[in-house]
Length: 282
Length: 236
Image 1 (cartoon, rainbow over the protein chains, first blue to last red):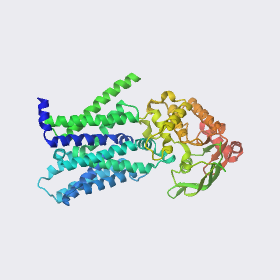
Image 2: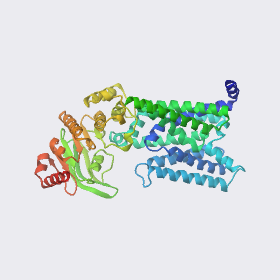
Image 3: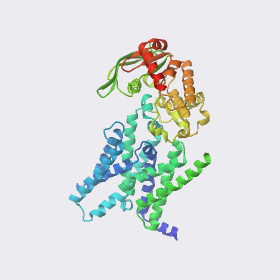
Image 4: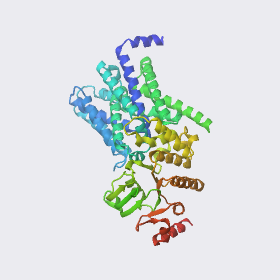
């Protein structure tokens, strides 16, 4: 019965697209999650996604045909500013993120309100924030864009894995032995921004943080080396996204929040498992 | 030529100058200890030597075939590291990052080097353990092994014994003295003037007055006598 229903849904291309894109985004967003959590930038996903939301409303008002052209550069620049000023800024990391995030959200909504392009304003806002339908309305072109960008993110991450680890663990030491730590921080910022713009399609801007940090935190409960934590968080994230999408299709729930709910459940399981194995170790 | 020569160096943040006109040189095999009050610029000096920070004025010259990025560094621990999920082996191996340049992965030679340095520091048995589960002394040894992967010539240590109990502190200083006997030049910041006097060959005192010379000269100097007395008074 359940499988028949699933098989029926899989005949529609938009369901297959949603599954492909969902799994890819989950994979990408989990990769840098460990780094962000450790650098105390858990909320950067939230902040940047609000920036992307602001940029998106400007794009909507300007009637741009391809809003990515505006959203991606604006988000990248904000990410660079946030992560660069992280160490020596007058406004410290968490406050800077809060400022940018709340500011962009307010401006986005304000602009949408003043120059309302469609009659269903709250519906539009809700869609952008919670991603309620956008993942089910993907075009083949968007799916390909997502595949290419995800491949690029995974490639960059694997190639620079050792450097990212070194820079995250100890920036001063890295600089002292001649690693271009600022360069790698910039790279991390750009990759994050790309991932967030990608992920907006899936869970909407409000729930992106969950996608970035939950798999990392769950994995950190269970494993004790950087490599195993990274792999575990990628696997967890993909499994959660996959089952979340399936559940949302079967139960008719919103995709984004279902995925996050599954992530939360996975964290609870990992927390319990970590308590048990940690207790045994001692 | 000396391994490291500092000429007329002034240190500071932005335009605020903390220490002025530092002149000293470090020769191969020296064990130099940097002492001074809190806020006298010890850590800033070390960061400037490591090229993490631009000097306000003056020059730092490297000689004897020492390259800028061939200095091993043992920084003070940061808050981030306290709950970092990383195995000891991963951390020690990251000491080889300077050798890699743009090559993405570590080669066999570098892996061998990190195993060797773990054995040297007596932490091979912890290789697969998680860094945050180790004791303070063990963590410092991990970071020392990492610094050794980055250099064969010179180590810069920033308070290597801070937060360690007396027994582990003595072990740590013993370990460092051993490395110095193997021919590695050591430059170390410490609050522990007793240890400085016991192990080092040279002392650099920065602050309101500046002194640089051998340990015996320091003990005879006014500034040295005064500082020793203050420290003893403070401890009692």
